Amino acid sequence: MNHPPLIVFTDLDGTLLDHHTYSAEPARPALDRLERNGIPLILASSKTAAEIEVLRDRIGCSTYPAIVENGAGLLEATPDSDPGDYPRLLEALEAVSPYLRALFVGFSDLGPEGVAHVTGLPAADAALAATRQFSEPGLWHGSGEDLWAFVTALSRLGVTARHGGRFLTLSFGGTKADRMDELARRFGNPPRLALGDAPNDREMIEVADYGIIVTNPYAPPLPPMDGEAAGLVTRTTAAGPHGWNIAVGALLDQLDL
Image (cartoon, rainbow, N blue to C red; front, side, top):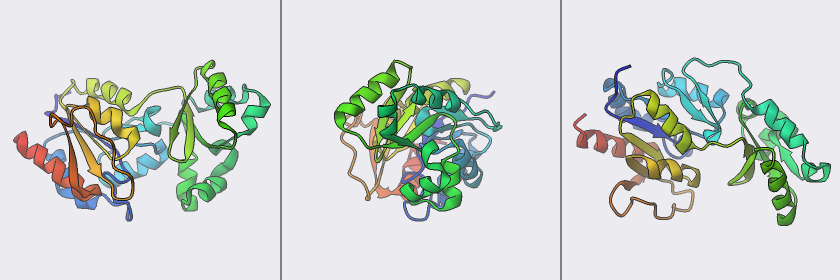
């Protein structure tokens, strides 16, 4: 495999995809430049493989793997039907006490129709979001003390729990930053650019060679990051794919690509 001059890791919603239209087309000029230069574009999202496979085709990066379910797993360039860790994760969930288990309502409990109800997604999109391989988001209906007991019980089984906005998400670990390291090695460890707009992108942005925080006017701004004072992490002025396009284009200019 030829070593590319750069590898790009990007979040989707509010970063490469417009907040309202879910389109990446405002970033098309920079996307086309990446393709012409043979630069891998790795999508990195909380979305499932089923969701990202559709988006990857639409964006034009289906020849590259993607980071799915917030780093709990990967979608390879050639998808397969492997259920991943999900059956084992659900077994671990059922191993906690019935009292604690009843306080957590996961996507597997809700089913596609319930996922549509709690997320506001259209039915078809909810079905893709419910097609999980590596992690189980859900709603917690107990006290803080019970949550501590629940998380502690799961940790003994190797399961981690992370809050991400509305949902508590269970998995056997892995972050976007972990997967970024893994995939960068496949391509000979070229310089890494990471872009995102949310707290779950922080680790990925901070450990990249170039980090870009994409402005999201619909969420609180991210706190200052490591490397920001030194200019290794920058923030866009324009939001979403418009800001993405400007920032990536500027870096390609800087690198003479």
